[in-house]
Amino acid sequence: MKVSKKVSGVEYAIRDIVSSAKDLEKQGKTIDYLNIGDPAQYGFHPPENVKQAYIDAIKKDQNYYSASEGIQELRSAIAEKENSKGLSIGADDVLITNGVSEGLDMVMS
Picture 1 (cartoon, rainbow, N blue to C red):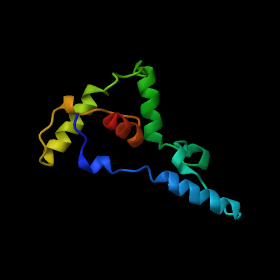
Picture 2 (picture 1 turned 90 degrees about the horizontal axis):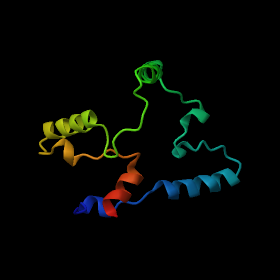
Picture 3 (picture 1 turned 90 degrees about the vertical axis):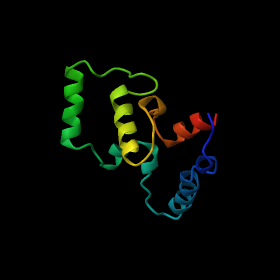
């Protein structure tokens, strides 16, 4: 797979920000680290409709691992949205990842 020129220059800037945050913390400032993927510990909780969707999925036995490349319906919807912007891609061109860092690592590896 050929890596996009846009992607090859991407850095994970949050690491520099965390370093600066640690310095501020040493100065007595209170820092909320929202970069760690657990916003609930800072009082940010999912909306009720999202909680209900989780409950409904569990009741329908839809709480299992999906295909490694992502759910087909989601991949198709993403391809359709991108095609509406003038791209020409199919669901097989879409890969769902757990985040930007994982996605970039997969693309550049």
